[in-house]
Image (cartoon, rainbow, N blue to C red; front, side, top):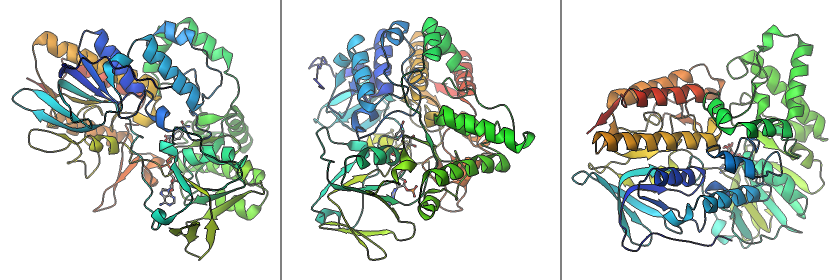
Length: 541
Ligand code: NAP
């Protein structure tokens, strides 16, 4: 299925651009840079294209943004020829789509697959990065573009005794490319974020028994998946460039109309009606039911209680329902999960919830998991859905070093410091697509990656045209942007929650919200303004 077609000449060692990653960002970046006449090498550790959609092939994996938005917009022909079969595409359909894109635009020939980046050293004299890879080869490039994603470096299981376990274990984020037997097995799922919430209902249908180990309950809303809704899709197809431009100016790079009323201005009946409408529509629209839901305690508590009451009405066992009700964080402050039958699955006889906030997982033994209350949970298969070393994990894994031997994240102990989320001071000619300090995971990442790669491509063209060899974020401009990112997050309820989007400072426990939350459109406008002003805030040499 993932036939490797490598067309990188044996002798080619020097490139204008090296792009790391063949996911949504890397595929488009390579295509974009090659189209403007640059020599490009793509490096990908997996055996095929797809990025997260290559690796996250766990049962039930599907995108939680509507398919008409979660796709490329740069080509009207591509947009119009691809027929999405469902409102929320499955992982396998997304992977087919990304393979189609790679073939259609002949992108694969620029990539080396099964090739991990092991290091990237900036050579100040040559103004080039020296990129070493797992095969032992070295390549050099003028520009290094990280398209490694924010949620790609998996948090590996670290449970005592796991090595003794005689059953099978797999990671949702690196699901093996082979049949994993589910039918008739006693399956444990650890982790109840978006991945766990998607996989539990699917495996429960075939497993002998599913034991879900929940440390924190998350809010989840129904997807109401089904066939693609034709109205919006047909409208977009009539004017893809116009819709793309509209998305570039929108709050989250997708077609969502946020609520316009504050909860306090509505009667209880009106509030209930709006919440019911969002719930019935399905998906992330729920967290924007009220205009002030992300910033106002009252508004958020009304929405949160609405979801808790839904859980109580769906789950038959009241005690179990309470365990599934999140009470320690505002709704939407962690990424809202989008599910199909998640809560109803707990009414099945073959599903048990183990609250590991009460009795932590103590260790594995040969046949299962022992929790702190001494209970032994017999298991044949364990699925870890533990999340990611978000934002910085994949950057760290590439071992990038500047002339002084520092890594990009060395000075990020009080939160990431970037200019536009794409560059960081001290690292000339290094770009990160949708990095920390950009809207990142808060925006639709297909369109966001297109925007970042276009900006980077235009920037390289400007440098070449103007005779500059290097570009680097100035300290002042980086400080200014970092302050802007913090200011945008100032009144957010999200900051109260501990999760992968919040950096907690070790010394004083103060919090930094990592993505830029001031709106995708405002972000794009600032990126464009900086470019139009001759890359103000950057040092060009
Ligand atoms: P996640 O949201 O970070 O969830 C990880 C889960 O593992 C949490 O429930 C966490 O509990 C639990 N966990 C971690 N270590 C544990 C331990 N030692 N013992 C017990 N539980 C432990 O990760 P995710 O579910 O992979 O989702 C991450 C993000 O990926 C999502 O927010 C979303 O942006 C993206 N994603 C998207 C889709 C989609 O498009 N449909 C699907 C999957 C993922 P605590 O909460 O207590 O830490």
